[in-house]
Image (cartoon, rainbow, N blue to C red; front, side, top):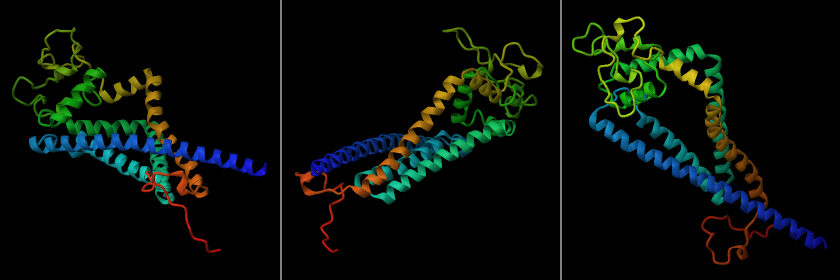
Length: 285
């Protein structure tokens, strides 16, 4: 009876070992695929950016962000995938600690943003104004700024007068764009209506223009977060929960690798031999 009880306990441990192993490897493989896709897209976008010499400020280039994010996801997920396949505790610990550090950094970053809201807003506004200087030359930033202004119904960084930093919209500039703002600052047109690209004509000469959004995009975004805190919270959980899952899964799996040894009869066809650790045959006391 004692022997049967021991076998039952071993079978239960084996089952949990395989379940956690499969879950961890599937998790790593999924994010490895996502990271590879982001890396490929980022490299392609960067090649195109260099080809057309758009977006001189690299820190504003979406391609650079995609490459960095994809590279980090690819490397970390690859470490986790290999560690779970080979039961390599060094790789598994590296994977777990890296995820933990990333999680802590993100949480600290969120706390800093909330505590230092004014300073954070100023930093984002400064970055946005730097991009607005080359609005018509940097197509990547132009697309981003246009989307943000239309999505959040805003204009400029802190207010619509920030567009004075652009050489074409500055009131001292020649041409029809002088003292105006991009058409994406204008009130949303009716569906199907032809966009008037000069709807922001001479808007910077007015204190309270009545045909454009006057609120800056940094304040508009913060207001949107407040009004949509459920959606924003869901997005935040969507970022944090997968990382927590990876950390917990690794933490549960590492002890299993210490107690589990493979024997030949568990892999009769030898399919898993290239991935799984082999049972030691050392008979020394």
